Length: 251
Image (cartoon, rainbow, N blue to C red):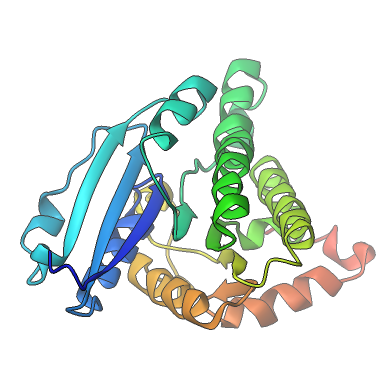
């Protein structure tokens, strides 16, 4: 790496998700020659990096992979201690909760832990970097499911709604830090392995589209982004339906 290169450190949790992979590839593709990115990739699953190794600008980035228990405080502490600074941190981990299995309390606890607890554990450690550095950008993946409780996914939606409440608190806490930013991403229906059993329709989108919108939101320092953007209008209608109407729906 050239000594004049700008060194950027990006932390990604849930790095094996399709949206995370799309974001990494897009970031690499748009990387300017004077920049070098260190990707610190954390996942519960064994990482697969071969899809990135043949990128044309591979000399300009480094992939550091960690397969860890993303809910273990000790492992979180140990991994983050190896990092000197964090410019951006993106949390992609998640699991689409099956309400029919929620009577199994072990399953239910695992779902809530992955979809909510892990976000808070990682974020609280990451913002400690931001406090010390006085800069940084944290991006959390929420969902349109968190905008209004629905019978088909209210447990999953509860975690996503809680993430929105949490990141709003962080945004308030760091208001006086002019170079610390937070972004909440709310994807709609995305065609990924997590939704492989769903019947797809015209309002479905792709991981690549979500990655593109995340990249734009980061550049613009936006706090909230629906992706694709038409979900902003769909959810406006759904949020504002009177209960007497909404409770008779079946979606």
